[in-house]
Length: 80
Image 1 (spheres, rainbow, N blue to C red):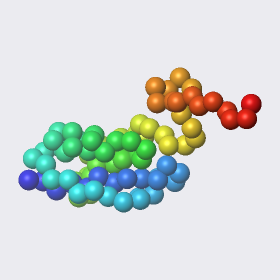
Image 2 (image 1 turned 90 degrees about the vertical axis):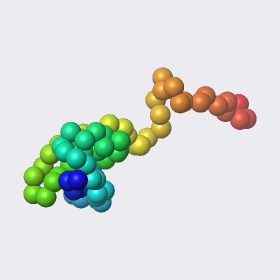
Image 3 (image 1 turned 135 degrees about the vertical axis):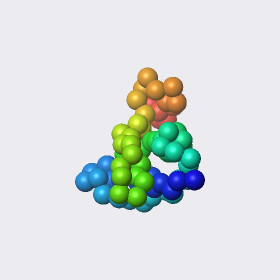
């Protein structure tokens, strides 16, 4: 098994927020495991001093959901 680190970077400045250790048989397996963590953080997968893959942020928690978002729930305004 090979040891990797998946670094979660800040959206502003790209500094390391935290990391998740990943054990895999090779790069391809490690990349597939890292994809499960994609979301609101940019990610970098490393094996020792070698950067294996970079993942862009795929979601945003900033602001309310758009009105055409499937999770948006319209609620009536009270008192009007």
